[in-house]
Image 1 (tube, helix red, strand yellow):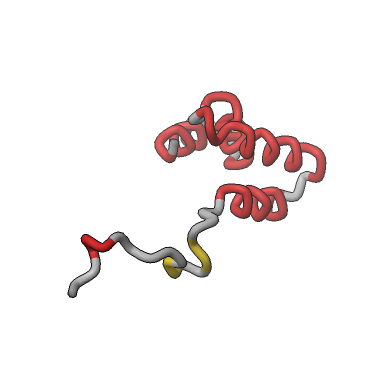
Image 2: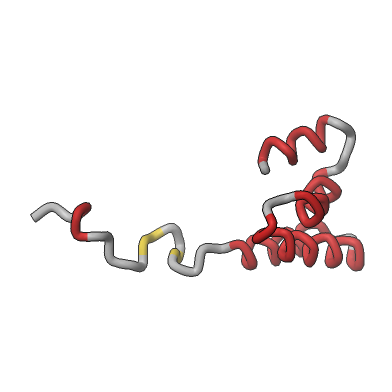
Length: 79
């Protein structure tokens, strides 16, 4: 997906346009969040706000502030 974004920008798309295209051609599970990003950006023209909402939508719910909130599997814990 990152390669697709870079290719799109190199081909002349703006970053918001390239991100919006992920909603059409990206991994199927991620498409809805990128479609919402594209609609918000198109409606408001505020890239930062649309990107912030996309980051929240894509955030890992098991992680908070970069710290693990779940217990690691026993095989990773030294006795």
